[in-house]
Length: 302
Image (cartoon, helix red, strand yellow):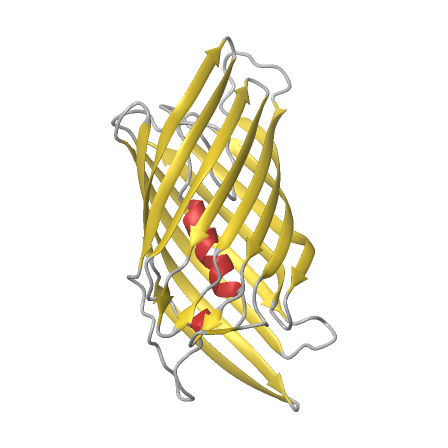
């Protein structure tokens, strides 16, 4: 089986780890931040996901397309604790090219629900800047359908809307924020459970993000919003999948994404977009390679 199911699952979970104080602010687009959600406030994030994967160009026998809309709602339970829920709607399509013929298999519908919390472990506030460290942990609940079939047979795990398993994750994130820029970094681990005799390989992530204010060059009164350039680095290390107790040698490996993006930040909402392009793909066997991941959307504080 290919590695897309595990990669996508953590992408969906990571989308929920957003931040925001009483007003909107810049922040990472592909992963977590340590900035809090103000007590009693909500943060809503809607993000469109476009993901393309395929075989090495020398093979060209499989193409995977995933489109999704991920809805995330966060709540500031206290000054330090924020609670989140994330639910995706997914449309997946796999094209198989054999002997000049093409076979298409697909599925669409709601995916697995992700629930988690983030707690501020350390903060140091200085004039015009702040440093925060937070810990987060959560669980992906198997709410998406994991037994879909088409005219051929039961769909493979990569095309199922849900995993069928209870998957836990945890990590540490740090943020250094100034008036001109913000730096974020996180390390996270995901433990994937077994369902339907299939287990996606566990996953480690290491992420970094820089958001730099491009406009206005100087802060002043009367500016309606701020434009930030974003550059992120995502390192994903996934173990091999297991099927019926046997290791799948055509799954897992290491992928490094370099992800340029942009954010427009107003008082209460943020529009953002990012393109994740793999610069390193050291995958096992015939695991599908990532072509790109595009995300765009908005978040709003209220």
